[in-house]
Length: 631
Image 1 (cartoon, one colour):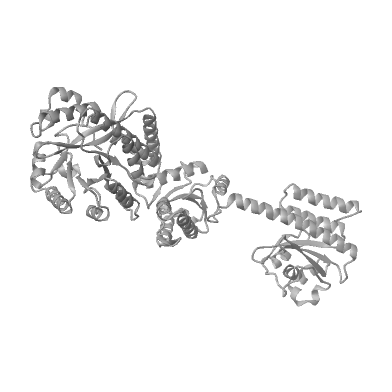
Image 2 (cartoon, helix red, strand yellow; image 1 turned 45 degrees about the vertical axis):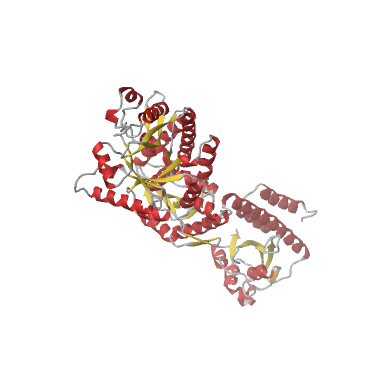
């Protein structure tokens, strides 16, 4: 470095201080050029960075006209280029004493000639791996050789450049690691948060935001393993980024992405932009040897008169995504103000149910399932109820919105299983016969751990055989799911002795296909059909057909929502053997249900038809007369 000369030492220390303080590389190189020119009268200095593609990018040329930088910007380095390009390519200094004599330098010779310089000495700045990071160029007046002292000064300046560039590269690498997602190469959540804070929010409609959630990552992880899941994330991220380019895509969570839309065409038509994402995703991808079609749901929001900050736009896009998931995964929903109120209501319901669970205010009430010919009780359906702090009993329908949250849904199922296990044990200890009890399970129960394991652990621990348990699964568990998660779990449950019922049968679509793809033991005909068993009503024909199909498949049929003796008689005549509904009994708690079971057993089969209107006044007091939903 500079030894003995105080002015040169000050020069060196100034540059080193700028490097140590993290000054921008542009400012540091500009100051270096100015100090070289001041220390070395008659010399002009410039520094070109060399990008990763081998192109020259002027970084500092304070004493040159703009045309000089423009002439070199984007020029590939090589042996047949101007002096800076040759030095960068050869990775060694190149001195040309007369620019005008070399045709390879003709494009810059005319520019620098007007500055009174005609010779160029270019020195490469090398990285730790020997690659060229930059080139420092010194222009002299007239053709001449470089003196030894000048060579020492130039080499010392190159060392300063190397230090500055290596520090810069280290900073960039650290920033890349901090702001780039390692799995996908996309900008990460930190970069997203930073970008959101930089957005201008004074021009309504100038930008928009997509929040994109992959729908089938957990399924792929559980079915094929995490290597396949990682491959799915990489494939989906590349496709989303391609569909949205030049707008930037960020990976902000495990299966969640964000796109800040600033291109006018994208902002003007969010539906078309979302459709491009879906089009990119619809082609199957190879995920660690498994063929998987990426599935995604998108929520979007635009900077508007009501959402005027980046934070509010982000919240709006989240609301839209939640709504899209609730109303049907695989689509796009654009935010509107009413969504916020609905999400707020949902969150309040989730809070209420969580608090009720923590305070043991979740109860099981039971409705009998019986033979329509004899009135014999053959089972019970456990229905979830919530006891409010004021003592009111709330049916599941009143807090159904909370069960759209997977955690809440699975927690409720676990709580209900524990209650049912305890109640069955209580009845058995009292000498009451309980043939089977059915519980409702949700989609979340199949995707938040092994349902079969939870059922086995809960009831085996209580000493209750799994042959006494029926799990009721509504059709929405199946809808739109081509994966094997549900089917595989049902196979495990049935193999363990648990019976499976398909609830709300006929209200979804392709119900018969479900019976083929995922065999069950029982189907429960939905109350909507039972309520319309009138002469000449199509429901009558449909119910008769379903009963006949079930009979041939060896599947039991339970009619739900029977409210009159006439309906019960009609169903029996059609061949339906089992039913439940208000015509027989209202849902009741453990003690009232125990009383019902005791009186029924004591009466003898067929002597107590159980029609609600004929129940004794004592029993009527034990059984709630409120017309609670059985869902």
